[in-house]
Every structure is written in C-alpha cells, then in structure tokens.
Length: 112
Length: 113
Image (cartoon, rainbow over the protein chains, first blue to last red):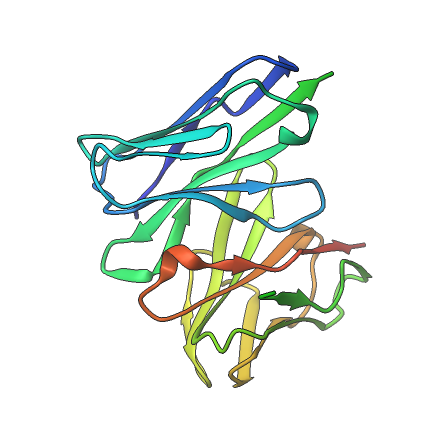
C-alpha cells in the first residue's frame, strides 16, 4: 500500500532554532496534511495543502506541497518549548480518499 | 467546539479479557476510525466505519472487531486481549469527502498485563 516516509525520526534542538522536517512518497498525493500531537493528546491538524507548489503558513509554521506531488516539508521558525510533540504528515489514500495514511512521525524536543 | 471523546484515558486489563474502547463524536460525521499508535510506527488504521453498521478493515484488523450501532458512537473490541495489544488507541471522525478534516480523540492508553 501507500507509504509516507518521514524524516528525521527525532530532533533535539535549542529554543530559538529553526526546524525542518519532510515527508516523501513513491505515490502521488493530491492533498498533504501536517498534524501535531502533543504529549498525552490526540493529533491536531496544523496545515492542509491542496495544490502542487503551494506554500502555506500558520504562524511560525510553513509547509509546502512539492511540485512532483510526492513530497512535502514543514518548517518551524524560532522554536519555543511548546513546539514539543510528534509531527505527522498524512494524505488521503488512493482509491479510498475517506481514509488517511500517516507517516511515522518526527518527534521534536526543544531544550529551553 | 467540536469533539471526539474516548471513554477512558488509561486502561489496564488482563490477558484474555474482553475489552471495549468507546468513542463518541458530536459532529454528525459519517466516517469514524480506530487507529493504533506505537513508537516508531506512527498511526496504523485498525478499522474504518463509513455509516451505521458499516465497517471496513484497515491495515491491522487482526485481533480486533468493531461495532457501530449509532452514528455518533464507534466501539473497538478486543475479543481476548493479549500483551502485544498494549498500545495507544486513537479514535477519529470526519465527514464524507472531507478526509483532511479528521478530528481525533485524546487517545486511550491500554496496558494488557
């Protein structure tokens, strides 16, 4: 089935640093989603991307939909301690767009 | 405020017990999902329901069953719990055709001893 390869698996950074993570697939996606899961909570949608080449921001977060439609990246600028969590990329599965496939996640730790 | 509510945050059950995980949504969504989350493996779909009494197997349905008798409620059943089912379980819901607007519950951390 479709798979999303997310990297890095984990990141340890200092407060104030910028963060970049990405997601790739061998399949084309028509929608890319980025979720954040804080410790002890369920994932929450951060950004949704619908067009190849699209660049979308949500506060200090910026995500881009790759031109090939096979990748996406998420950047976080000037990280703060509350950015801690697991970030997942996701997209609707082919032939059944009611379901989402998720990457394995990037676990972000921010040291104050 | 939209809500997906899972009945328990933490559960400890014994091997062989029948376990019910309950999920309720208040958004009148047609679709409901059960995922399992394990470190390094991300979210894996166990079962999906697109309507009352309708269900579809996900990627890892073995050892699980589901029930959807009412639109707002989706239950995950472990017929005979085993230690390898110790995990975080996440419920989600979405409207038809709007998979990208899935809302998640807070999760149930199940430990089988």
